[in-house]
Image 1 (cartoon, rainbow, N blue to C red):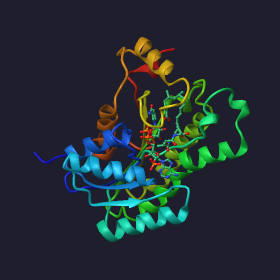
Image 2: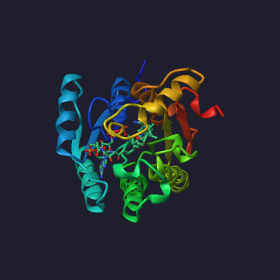
Image 3: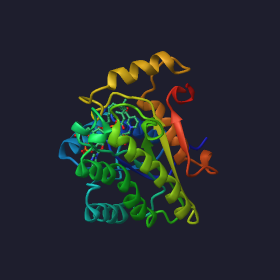
Image 4: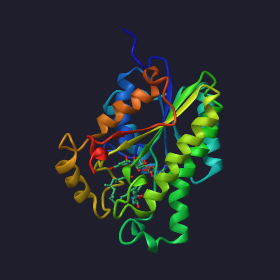
Length: 257
Ligand code: NDP
Ligand code: N5H
């Protein structure tokens, strides 16, 4: 039987280390036969990624640098991908950032530049990479981003990121309408709490994860591999009729009042 993503070229943005959601996604996509292209911002992430790929015997088609804070960097990254790979069929956006001090206390204290930074890196980046990626998706494609329930409900402490994720989810719908006519789909996975480098050091993480264990229908947290398989579904033909959607991978937590 042919694998779900055999012969497909997929760009993965946001592997910082082995705990990254994007690394869980990488494993699912690799097992499904995809050719993988990676982007990262920091040199540290690049080094971790290269080691991980080596350890798991995954040969990337390309690893390119991309800081989503810069239009130039995004354009250069996709130019390089075009040169090295040509056509792409999928894009995984697994990137977010907010100042640590904005992720605690009251949302009302959010600073102007902290608000704009969270929006720029965590929401606008999906717009800019979709614009660049669509040029390479000449055979149609699928774009998947990562969101969190704090976009829909007040999750104390998530604050400025909740508002950025609301913006990200609305962007998924507006982008889906724009690129749908070119055979490109845009969807989001809304994951439950997972202990990653981003989650490390922010207040409230342990408490949120314990509440999920107590209240979620499955009475447990989810992991990177489960997000990986849901993302694989969105990138594959199995989800060909779905676009503009937000799929919860949260052990059912979001249905509990
Ligand atoms: P990681 O820390 O592993 O990944 C975050 C990534 O964002 C890093 O690879 C980092 O790159 C990248 N990034 C930040 N700023 C920029 C930038 N300016 N340009 C390019 N890349 C940038 O954390 P997660 O895997 O947890 O996060 C991935 C996504 O999942 C985020 O959107 C997050 O909001 C979402 N999510 C996470 C949940 C969780 O509980 N962990 C729950 C629900 C959603 P670099 O390391 O090179 O700086
Ligand atoms: C309610 C919660 C817990 C509190 C909020 C956490 C929000 C985290 C999201 C952002 C992306 C975290 C962040 O930007 C951390 C940075 O300020 C500091 N870290 C870094 O710079 C590291 C080195 C790099 C790799 O990180 C990034 N992002 O570049 C939410 C949690 C229960 C769920 C959760 C953790 C959600 C989420 O969106 O990640």
